[in-house]
Amino acid sequence: MVIQEQMSIQEKLNILSDAAKYDVACTSSGVDRKNNGTGIGNSISAGICHTFSADGRCVSLLKILFTNECVFDCRYCLNRASNDVVRASFTPQEVCDLTMGFYRRNYIEGLFLSSGILKSPAYTMELLFQTVYKLRTEFHFQGYIHLKAIPGAPPELIQRAGYYVDRMSVNVEFPTAEGLRTLAPHKSRKTILTPMRQIQTQAAQSKQELSIYRHSPRFVPAGQSTQMIIGATGENDYQILNTAESLYQKFDLKRVFYSAFVNVNEDTTLPMAIQGPPLLREHRLYQADWLLRFYGFGAEELLTVERPNFNVLLDPKCDWALRHLEQFPVEVNTADYRVLLRVPGIGMKSAQRIIGARRYGKLTFEDLKKMRVVLKRALYFITCGGKMMYRTKLDENYILRNIIDPRERLPVEELTYHQLSMFDMERSGLL
Image (cartoon, rainbow, N blue to C red; front, side):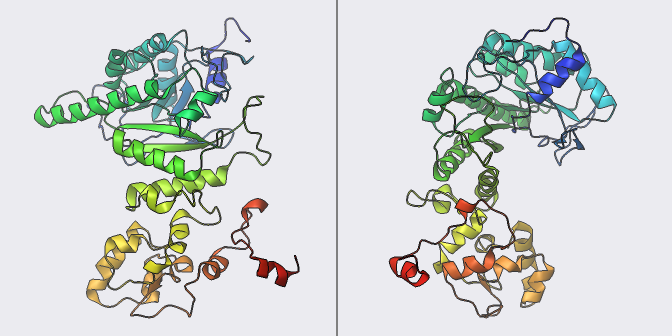
């Protein structure tokens, strides 16, 4: 461990903002709170202003760790106890000064505060509570605050902190308990899920009290989120998506974030990905997550035990449609809203436009184009007035060959989408 004495607040900021970049569960909206005239700032649910950091990241919040010191030794973490890195810690006053200073300069609209485990979970959570309490009561900051709850901290500390922040989150870290035991032996699924359940229960009680008493204090009004690391352990997409769906259903989460694994440590138990983080896989999981939350899909529909991974060449909805061609083509002039949502190339807004416009007459493909339907994908799965746009075959390989952009640069090993039979190999000269 590298220790520096008399570190300036700027040096601490450089270290602790960089250390926070691997935490992607950094939401910046979800709650409306107008300035009541007694403080500074407000929070807008539709989103807030954004700026860009020096390394190109889009930043809307001051995103920092309270400290990068940690008593845990998680194998995947840069700040693990056994790593020889420069350590730094803020004080509650320093975090408040930074937040107010950046806010007054219009650099940020809120704060995202996480932390390593300093001494113990209870000690760390007490410092985090002191920080948000001071920011709200002494500095009268009314902007957005997202706070990481520390697993293993006393429930009363998490409860007290929840009344001073907009959102809280507890990272589940990995999709399965086995992955957690392997790479984070000091953590357990129980210590992670316990505060998640507490936040869910307390938030529900707060909403009920608010419906009765108008001025009742609000507990985590923007809800809670979590993060899973993708690619560090051997879980397939089916396991990941089922875990996410279970978290949404059991804990009323607002978001599950997926973080492509970045290997920052020399450890033989960690995968050595020559091609770098699995960013394309992360992207497909985010698209599938959107289908779970807004398009009425279930995890069991999108993937199965027999086919547990997405085809990275396609977005998940298109991948699903190709495996369920018996449900297509869909007639856009008669299909209901839920059916339209399952057509590749038709999103929520375009489906709503179709439902509204067809009351005044039959729609054509030209009408769909004006409604921003992506006909490049949709034309294989829809009819207008009983006719398809072109003469096409409802065949998986035929549609796949035509729908993939040949200019798209993808990993070589991910380009194989059709297994050759012995007869194909004979014709191609491979046998």
